[in-house]
Length: 256
Image 1 (cartoon, one colour):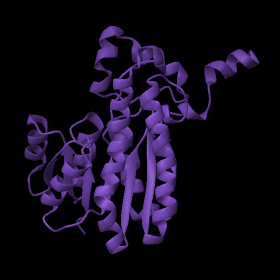
Image 2 (tube, rainbow, N blue to C red; image 1 turned 90 degrees about the vertical axis):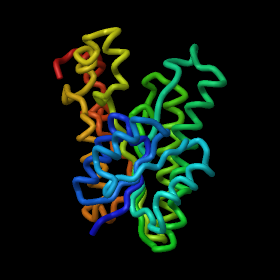
Image 3 (cartoon, one colour; image 1 turned 90 degrees about the horizontal axis):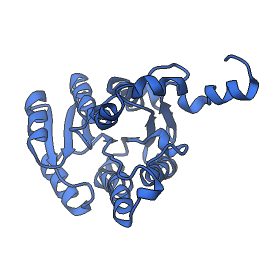
C-alpha cells in the first residue's frame, strides 16, 4: 500500500537519497526544501506522480503548514522524516548570537514545526511514524557547538514524542549519523584531501556511513518490522559512539 511520506531537507546529500529510496519502495514522497531549481530537478527526476514539491522555509511554521496542506490535496502524512539540518560556526569562539539562532531555528525549531505540521493528521487516524535525523554531535562534543546543542535537544524531543504520542499509535525515533560522505564535507576535503583517512582511526569499523546506510536505518524504523520500537536514538556511525579505541590503547598501553 502506497504510504504518504514527508521528507524535509530533500535536496541534500542524505535527503535526496531518502526521497529516492522511499519512491523506489512504492511510496509517495512530499519533498520539502527551499524553492529553487534543485527542488524542481528532484521532482522531475523522481516523477511528479511519485514526488511532490513542498517549497517552504522550515523556520516559518505557518508557511510550511500552508505549503504541505496544498501539496497533500486532502491526503495525510503517514511517515515524517525530519532530515533538514545544517551547521554554522565551528567552535564557541566563532559562535555569534546570529549563528546560534540560525542553528536553533533550522535544526531544532524547524523540526518541531515539521512535526506539528503532521501531528494532527496522524492523531486523527491513530497511526503515524516519525523519524528524526539527529547526529552523533548530539551525543558528545565534536565541534559545531550550537548545532550539537540543537541535535541533543532532538534526542530529548524524540523521547517526549514517543512517550506522549504512543497512545495515538504514533512511533518516534531518531537516527544519529556519524561522518557521512556528502557534499557538506567538500570544503573540509578541499582544505585537507586526507581528511577521511585521518578520521578513520576514531571509528572502530574504520569506515563511514553513506547516505544509503542512513536511508536503510530510516526505512527500517519506518517499517512494520520496527512496530514496537519507539523512543530510540540509533547511531549509524561505524561504532564511533561505542568507545574511543585510540584513547583506550593509550590508557592500557596495549594494541586493541
